[in-house]
Image (cartoon, rainbow, N blue to C red):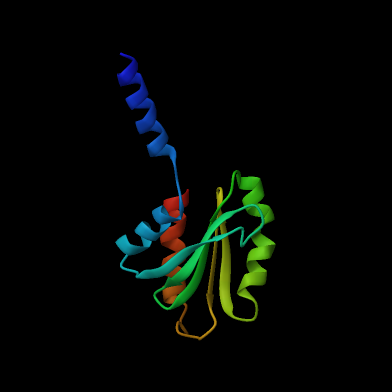
Amino acid sequence: MRRMVFALGALLLAGCSSNANDVLDAWKAAGESPSGFTDVGEKLPGGRCQAGKVSGLEATVCLFDGAEQARKAEEAGWALVGDAVGSTVVSGKWVLVVADPRKEDPSGRRMNALVKAYQQKTR
């Protein structure tokens, strides 16, 4: 009986855990191609972040302990975008920063697709 309770608890914890790989998987399922994502620590203050490229765009995905912390990190996300075309999107405990410094997505369609897939996964 104890083993069964432990096994159920482990399954519940596994089901509740989230990380940036969940977002990367959502992008792959949407036909995008994330690559080179690595742990970049607290690239946004208080967040556990990974950064890389998705379909030619630079992206940083950060998970925070709470939605309030994520909202507070939004301004720092805009600093990462800098002078490039980009966006910072808060969704629950998540923040996505996506930028197009090389102007590879002039219509903004790829960036929009990334944001939509991210929002669907992080709600």
